[in-house]
Length: 488
Image 1 (cartoon, rainbow, N blue to C red):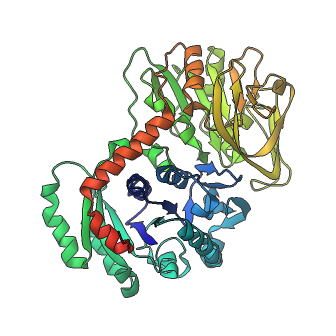
Image 2 (cartoon, rainbow, N blue to C red):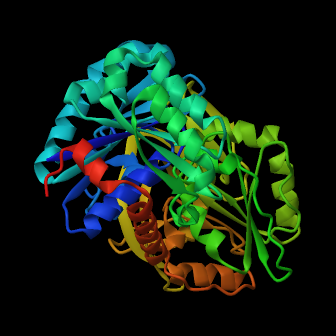
């Protein structure tokens, strides 16, 4: 069994995409491949077939391998709830809340869980491609590390380090990592990859040689800027912080999503960004909700009560009510649905302190937070018959008169969501609705726009193949196979 670990000089250097691309590359060559990440921190999660949750990136990597995702591909998931605390998910199930200091002190107790899951994947596959988290050069975290060198050492897996040239100082990042790592960790790194290169790669030949001469690591290739990566599901909020193209089509309808402080599962909206007649925008804190939006969507959130307060602090409640008075449409997904109701109750302090807070009052419902978490895949149809396939991932139960006007009907007979009497305000718990061309067509038609009717799943699959093809040309695959211990 071959194994290799892709670590990075920092967060958002492209590790997840490279792992997904390598998974598809070797899968396309007929090999049995599995992705693995011992610990992920993300509020974008996916539901596995057995009712667990893992990081969205590992679900995408499983798709790249053409296998169903399992909880063993990401046994430890941290979902930030506050600046100093996160919900701890162990093998797909909530295991409590982990605070930053306790996390540093106690997380090595979770290492055996990660090792067991990794060993199970080893038995299934010819290749396991492991993704690190953050950077191994954060040496202050090394003693309790289970995500980078701590895990690599525990299972004796070789490492390839990735540097992001697009953000600059890539030579300093790679050489600096070599300088601060211990001799043992330094020796575990067998090569490096330069990622996100734009322009003529020959101009960086001296830079590559500088890294080789100063580190002794092998240069494994330079990966160009992968435009196809924009067609993959969003993994974390870093993408939202980048400048956006506001669009220029005068015929486009505008769909706006406010960037809540704990926004989650916002990959729900990726398909809209591929629609030519949609001007899709995320609204950052401090900016008003746009007056010309046809639809405002309140997204999922990891902390509904806290984000209800955050929403009001931005003045977005005033903007939203003005939007409704102008005849605009509003949709809430999961936590956003809960925010549209009259009240949100949390008597057990599930999200922190016990409290009840007023919602936006746009739907005649209220939500009671409970300790049970709903995690399941769902299929069904809208009331107009448009089919969808998605998932539920939430705490809390929403009840009230508006639930007598459901938005969705699941194939198991359950109903989900609520609508206002005039149909302009609606909400539901189901994620992933807009991946389906049929339901996207229905929504956009109601806004006066046409849908491209593109199959989002097909677009994602094609993007993975495109990335795999690029990697096959720009990376030294023979060297990677040798490092991983793969024998033809």
